Amino acid sequence: EASNLASAENQTKKETAAELKEPNMKFSANVKGMVCKMGCVASIRKELKTLDGVSSVEVDFKEDELIQFVQVSYNDTQANETVIRSAIESINNEQFQLSAVQTETL
Image (cartoon, rainbow, N blue to C red):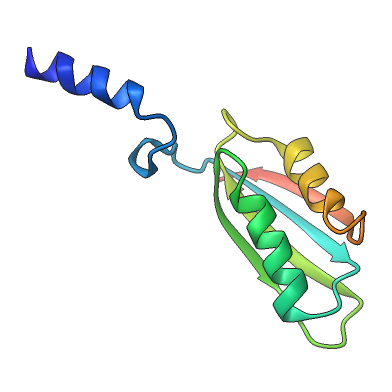
C-alpha cells in the first residue's frame, strides 16, 4: 500500500527535479548575433532552462568570433528542435540567428 501512496504523491508533485526525464537528444547549432559572454550567453541559458525537458545548455563563446556554438541536451518527450530553436530566436527581439542546426540521439 505504501508504494501506491508514494506513486500517487509523485504524480501530484509536477515538475520536481527527480521527475525530470533523462536527456536522450542533443540539439546543436551555430548562433550569430552574440556580442558578449555575460549577457548573451546568460540570456540563452536562462531562456532554454525554462523549457520542460531541457537538461543542459552549453555555449562555446569565443571572443571576437561572428558565430558561436550552442549545444542543448533534452528529452524528446518534452521538447524538440522547433521549440528550442524558436526559444533562442525569440530572445531580445530576434537578436540571434541559428544555422547548421543538428539534432542527434544521445
